[in-house]
Length: 484
Image (cartoon, rainbow, N blue to C red):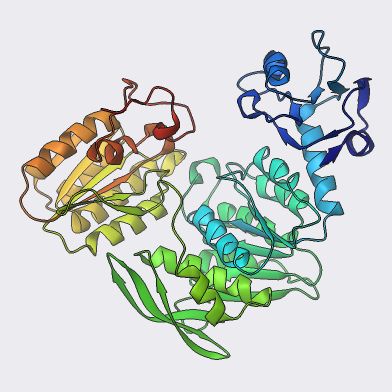
C-alpha cells in the first residue's frame, strides 16, 4: 500500500487535487494499470503524460505528473513533482528504508536473471520472498520492485543491471543490499565502457553499497571480477563468499555431469559433500545453483534443503528452456537475449547434445562497440565446433560465418538470414530434410526476436513481417501473433 502522505514526505511533491489517500500499487504503463494503482507519467521515448486519461480509465486512483492534466474524476488524486522519474526513485528508496526485509541484489554480465529467479525459488520454498518481476533491473524497474515490498516480506531478491558507467552504483543506493551477488564479468554492453576492467569496476559498485554486516557473494572462478573486488577494501563486518568450480572457492561443485535431461554432481562446503541434481543442462546453471545455495546458507537454509528445492526449478521463458517438439526434434530456446558470454555457454550446451544434427540459429549481438567484430568472430569459432549447421541472422552475422569458415566449417552448412522469420524457414527446411535426432538452438539480441524460430518449429506462426522490432517483449505476448 502506498500512501499519499508518504509520497509527499519523501519527494516534496505538491498535492494538486485530493482524492484517494492510498494506492494498491504503482506503474508507469497505462496498459498495466490495475484498479487503485498510482500512475507515474514518465518522460521517455514516449511521454507518459499523453496516457494519463488511459490510466484513469483503466482504474488508476492517483497520478504523479510534471504538468497540468485534463479534468478527471474528483476521486483521482493528482500529485505534481519537478521530475516524475526522480519521484519514483525517491518513493522506492523510502519503501526500502521502511522495510525490515533482508535484500539480495544480483548483477553480472550473464546469467543474472536466471540466478535471481533461482535464488528466489530456493528462498521462497522456506521464506516469504519478494522477487523483482521479469527483468525489472533498470532505473525504472528497480524502484517499481521496491514499491512492492510489504511488512510480510522477510526477504527480497532484486536484479540490478547496467548499460553505462555509474548505473549500478545509483541503483545499489536505492536497493541497499544485505547480500551483493555478482555472477561474472563478461562482454555484455562492453561497447559502452572504456574497457573490460571498467566494466568490472561497474559491476563491483554493487559491493560498495552493501549494508554493514552484509556479504559479498562472488564468482570465484572469474579472475577479472576478483581483481576488481581486490581493488576496493572490504568494509568492516562484511564477509566475502566465493562460489565456483575451482578448489579455492568456499562453495564449489565437483564431479559434475551434463546430459540433455539435466545436471548432477556434488556440492562441497566446509560442512561436507551434498549430491545434487538440476533438471537443467549446462555449466551456467550450476553457477546459478551455487549462488542460490550460498544465499540459502546465509539465510539459514541448509545445503541439503536447498538442493531439494532446486530439483523443482524451471527456467523463465526463452532462457535455455528445452522443448521436445517431436520424438526426433528438440529445441533449445535461449532466445530472450544474447551477450557473447551467454551465447558461448549456449553453444557449449549444444555441443554436448547427443544428436546427429545440431543447428545453431544465432542472431547478431548488440552494444559491443569496437569489440563487435572480434566477439562475433569468437562466437563463430565456437559455433564451428558445436554445431553441424549454422544460420546467422542480421548484418553482423556475416562475421559469425566468416569465423566459422576459417575453422573449416562447410559452406554448404551455413546460411545468412535477414530476419528470425527467414531463419525459421531455413531451419524448418533443414529439419524436414534430416533423418535421426535433431537439436536446434535459437539465440540472439532481444530486438532480433529469435523466439520466432522455436515458436515456428512448434507450430506457432508469428504474423509479423518486421525483420527487427524494438518492442522489448516476447513475440508470444504480441497482439500481432496468430496461430496457424
